[in-house]
Amino acid sequence: MTLASATTVEPTRRDFLFIATGAMAAVGAAAVVWPLINQMSPDASTLAMASSEVDIGSIAVGQIVTVKWRGKPVFISHRTAKEIKEAEDVDWKTFRDPQPDSARVKKPEWLIVIGVCTHLGCIPLGHQGEYGGWFCPCHGSVYDTSGRIRKGPAPLNLAVPQYSFLTDTKVKIG
Image (cartoon, rainbow, N blue to C red):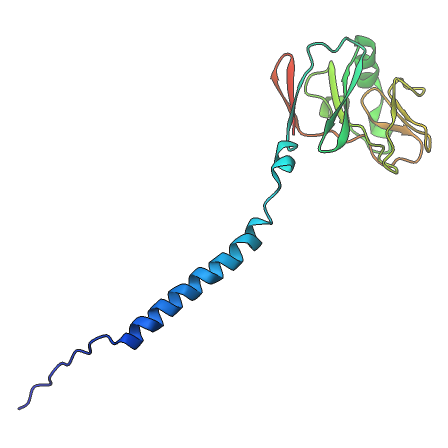
C-alpha cells in the first residue's frame, strides 16, 4: 500500500511577475475609468443652482418679484385679498388646463410660478391682461392671478416649481 505524497510547488519569479503585472493593469484601468465616471457628476455651479432661498419678508402685498432659479425667471406674487378671491371663485373646471387655485399655492397669499410662457417660452408681464395676472405680449397668452391660462395659444398653466416655506419670511425654491 502506497501513500500519495503531497508536493508543494514553491512560487517562482514568473508567478510574482504575473501578479505584479495584473495589479498594475488594474490600477491603470482604474486611473483611466475614474475621470470618465467623475465627469458625469454635475458641476458645482449646477449643484448650487439646484435650490435657492428667497427672503419674501420685504415683498409688499400686491407686488410681484422676479428671481432667477436654474437660469429661469420665477415670479413670486404676494397676492391681495381681491386676487385670492378672484382665483378661488372662478369655475376652473372649464379651463384649458383645469387646476384649482388651492393646488397651485401652499399659502393663499403667495403664488410662486416659473415665469416662462408655456406657448413658446417668452416671459409674460405681470399685472397685465384682462384677468390681472400675466400677459405674454409675443402671442397674446393671458394668465389669471393664479397663473392659469385663460386665453391665447398657450396650452398649459404657468408651471409651479417645487418650493417650501422655511419660515414666514423665507422660501426655498427647488
